[in-house]
Amino acid sequence: MGLKLYNSLSKKVEDFKPLNPSVVTMYTCGPTVYDYAHIGNWRTYTLADVMHKALKFNDYKVKYIMNLTDVGHLTGDNLGDADIGEDRLEIAAEREGRSARDIANYYIDDFLKNGEKLNIQKPAKFTRATDYIQDQIDLIKELEKKGYTYRTTDGIYFDTNKFKKYGALSGMTEESIKEGARVEPNPEKKHPADFALWKFSPTDKIRWQEWDSPWGVGFPGWHIECSAMSMKELGDTIDLHLGAEDLRMIHHQNEIAQSEAATGRQFVNYWIHGAFLLVDGGRMGKSLGNAYTLQDIESKNFDPISLRYFYMTAHYRTPLNFTWEALQNVQNSLKKLYDIVGGYKESKEAEVDERYLEKFLDALNDDINMPKAIAVLWEMLKADMDESEKIKTLFKFDEVLGLNIENYVGFEIPQKVLDLVKVRQEYRKVGIWDKADLIRREISQLGYVVDDTGNGYKVKRKI
Ligand SMILES: [Zn+2]
Ligand SMILES: [Zn+2]
View 1 (spheres, rainbow, N blue to C red):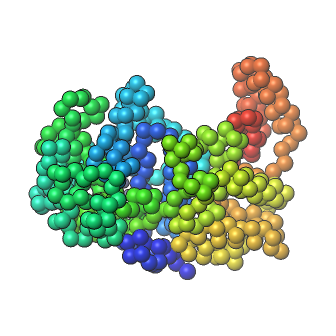
View 2: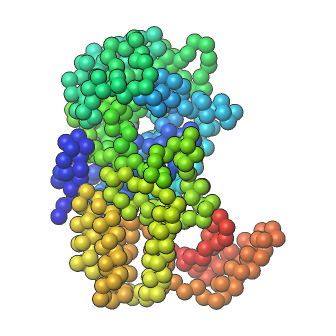
């Protein structure tokens, strides 16, 4: 069975047929880098990673881009109108007393570091909005030339009434957009759905980030960056565009409008949207104090990989409810898995079990059904099969699952290593770091690594 995906555009499960069978193009709407990503965000980025890996598992080459929003994402987005309010990067700069550029660099670093902990494979490129200002200006110029723009006192706007297909993705009408916004519509907009392509800098304040443009000094609207960067890096039409469910109604609708109005071609063939993460059965939010970060997860002694596993316990289109208890249950399952494979012995001659491999692939190809894929894993562990074949097959599965299974197979730490680890801990306790480092090197020479975790350490085989 080939890959089948639910396309938010057609609202149907479709056979996946890439434009160019040898290279699939994929774009994911990435984070706005003004704060730490929370576990709701990570659910989306883990979905994107699983999709990326599932495509490769299907032997596709993938050209994958994720953007980093470091300008233009305004606070009004929370109220249903992303064209009002303040730039999140500018607010964070005020809050933390450093430049917007510094803020972005800091949170990008944090994002990459934490992504690694979740075994999220890096895209071919991370595109930063501020590195593509000229491309965004060029795209707005093209839209202006084709008559899709108009000017108000605060910026250049896209005239949605001129784009006949507006609303095809969201199914939203002018009326529902008006109702969805919790603020009064900007009276200068011709239609409530119109959105800013370029915003003028305020006259009473100097922004950290602003640029010259044919229309005046200012900064790009939030939506235009994804159109400009996707088309520049991947072409006018791409195969897959991923994002969280809350981007579908407005952000993605606007991406389609800008791109297709400019090129006259379809922007994206398959739109993939990940469902929300709930916390304790309710909404998650910074103001509610439950927008947990990966740091919160680790400080409660959870392995980030447990969180990755937790995400895969639900289908990506189903809302998933996070509780600490649920995460504990998942971590117990993961530990059980590690214990089982810890008792397995590898053999070089062993081969992948084709039957289970196919079952696993079928689950992936059934619209990335990870609960089903994980069920296949547990079924295989119980099957009457050679251990070494199970290992080989598990390693294959783990190319997508990303559970670090390889670190735990046939894992018996030699006594000598354990002794060294103990001595190293003693040195660390009293702060004799150079000695502790020397021992770490010795352990490494024996083929093992010690990872220092929040409250202790973990010994792993070096891969
Ligand atoms: Zn997007
Ligand atoms: Zn986007």
